[in-house]
Length: 252
Image 1: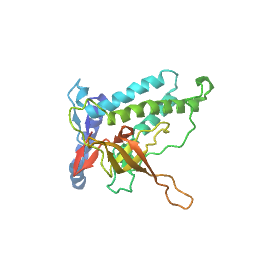
Image 2 (image 1 turned 90 degrees about the vertical axis):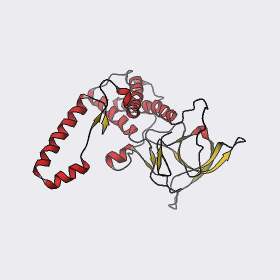
Image 3 (image 1 turned 180 degrees about the vertical axis):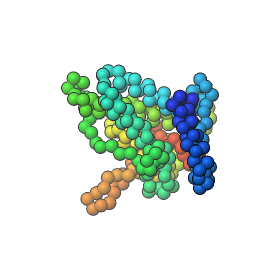
Image 4 (image 1 turned 135 degrees about the horizontal axis):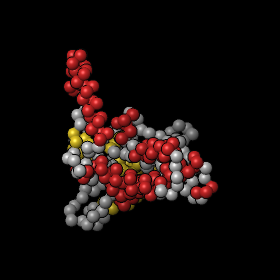
């Protein structure tokens, strides 16, 4: 487990070491299990948060938008805790990688799978972004903050997956069978629109500019799924953060 040197994390490491040392002295079977499955903390250097680039960038992104959406109202401790839990659910629902190479499988791995074993779901709520603040009750105000955070954070998160710096080196094109994230407006919180690339349409230079994608639609009355197929430019698609190719992990 990699982390910075936060006092709570150092304390957790000390507690785990004490428990492991105690159990190792009393049970040989537990000792063998802990030797293979025990948690080993690896800390960054003090006062060097930049060394945790992957997770620190996510923390910065969350803090930035959290300050923007939470400063316009006063919350009780319970209200604030509820908003934080809902934001945690949004972060842990983001797609990381496809779960299989089956072209008909739209499933994806999320941080929630590593924590709970399954993807997180949220109940559908009405859109309250257009309602004036003084017309909202406490529950609607909390939901308003969740939706505001989702709108701001999801757009910037997708932008990090689709950065387009000056073309000084050749990038890998989209390929048939890739599982991608669709960049669409008016998507409710914790809902990610994913699609499989079925056809590619290269431009005159040989690079892919448009693709035909297929999405996992809703169920029909006869029990079959309604598969949708349409064309999208690559500017409306994002690679998953971790793409598996020839047994190698590549992070765009």
